Length: 106
Image 1 (spheres, rainbow, N blue to C red):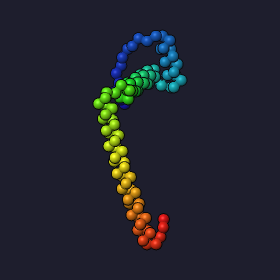
Image 2 (image 1 turned 30 degrees about the vertical axis):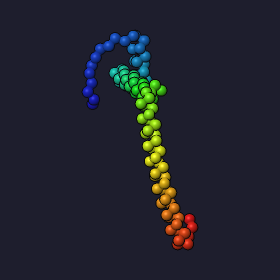
Image 3 (image 1 turned 180 degrees about the vertical axis):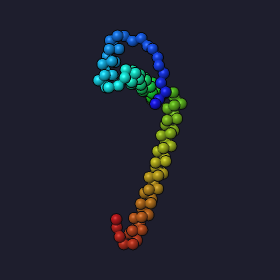
Image 4 (image 1 turned 60 degrees about the vertical axis):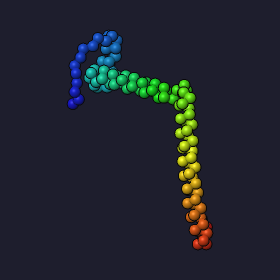
């Protein structure tokens, strides 16, 4: 069993009543319902924080240096892709020439 800590909290009576009803419906203890609710709240908060970090990373307020670095990276990737494409074309061309020499076509 996971480590647990007993605690006392004050909650509004209507929330307590709804928690009790839900616990009976789910056939679990009130503690399980409260734990489930807290886990869901924590998960939602963590997702919200993560989304804020992602949004910040993709914010449109880039410095000139950021834009220059991005352009350089894109240019470098384009050159790498061109070189790889050229290698593929050359390999395919060599294969086609070999097949033509053998008298077959693909």
